Image 1 (cartoon, rainbow, N blue to C red):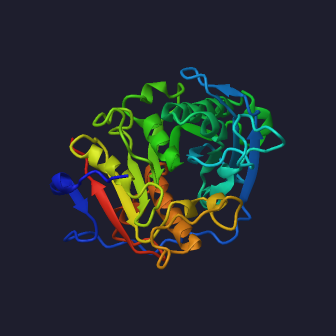
Image 2 (cartoon, rainbow, N blue to C red):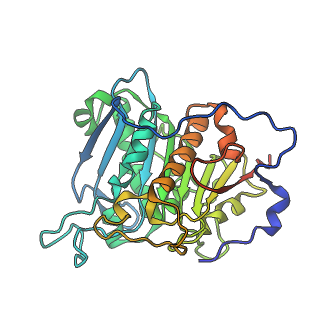
Length: 355
């Protein structure tokens, strides 16, 4: 997939690391959590056919894993994560949804547990949702966005101590702030979160929900029809894109989301390109030796290790959500590239607000 040209936007981009008279970087911040005794893990599963998309009729599961602090005071920001396109069932012969013939849904949504744990330590409630039904029967990005909204509607009810999650996740009732929401989408999920947060579709958010930070991870990027970016143009919510230079699935096409923002965005937009990172290592369930795991790298002789790639994501995601959900400006140097990501070589980029 081609990457949109950046040359025309160069004058409006802050290319990171070379700013004169920049403030000193803050003291080093520990991003990777070794052990997480203070983190609790829960799951909710309302069934494989619990949700029918109101626009397309696509039938989906409402299933997720939740990482949260064991001890919670007040209301905490909520982060929703959505995986991308993968095998929907643990049998590659399965062609229907729900899975047939004894096959079970594939747990792609558990592939970001390491990130959920790292963020939960920092007082975020992190929800990684399953998107298997959409993967099996639809590649529509509106389906992905509206499934996120369906989960957000459940969490809005839980914030009031109501709804089907109130019994399942009773310790979290009235402890979630749906006015302080972050999203992350990997691969096709990356375009899904851009769709969900876009200026065009933000009116579809459940009442009371406000998305404040969007992180497309190795995202798909193409426009339909070509040249019409309206479905994924985000100018009112901060965006941070992460790509890898050796991504064999989608390349660095996701950098195009920053190109779209030039001259339009009202808030900062960021990206980072991680040298020698591939597509699949961000998800542990897509990484060998996991079932169906695949190394998609275009530079296998020099690729970064799965652990290093994930540590880079933890650092970048932590900085982004701390900055825009907790309001902690100490993390700005990570987003601007002045504080490098641990264990990898990377190039950061910023699009400044135009107004």
